[in-house]
Length: 236
Image (cartoon, rainbow, N blue to C red; front, top):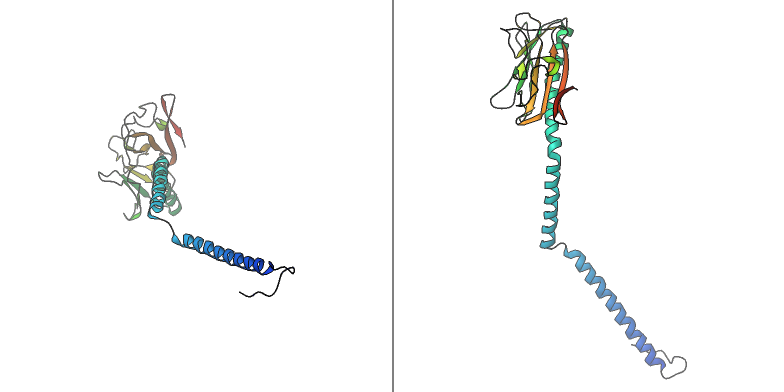
């Protein structure tokens, strides 16, 4: 440390200057120590306890989200099964009219999911399209469906899941032939009116239905509702 001279002509000058230098050095060291300490804390990262807490919170949020989304996911699969079935029937009718050929649709309820729909060219027997519906949805009827007189378009009694060829004793209930004039018939050439039900097991109000009018090939979609304890079908 170097003393240049007296401060204010007083003998106390060197002492005061020395004290200021000492204080400045101490403050500089203290500042560097604080910065270093803070840098070490920043570089330290998370502790195991902090990481476990974050993971636990994330798991709780994920479980809550899954529970909340389950009804929406189930409804989405029900709607997909209905849309796939309706699309397959419309496709068969449209290509029959466009190509001036007969196409037929076969509905298969399998003991082991999924249920299946095939579209076949009548002249060659070639399967042109195959569709499957979601595994947890099937061509089935649930206990408690509205019975005769309360079914969609008044077709059937609500007891058979695949119930085409209404009023034809020897017809094939699960096969529909579409003709170039837009009509729907059975294998024997009878007009084919009927209905198919789609639902999830043990879930009555997941029930959807599609009706077919043979004379025009018209398709209509339905869903089961409940208002104040009254079950009824509404057209979609």
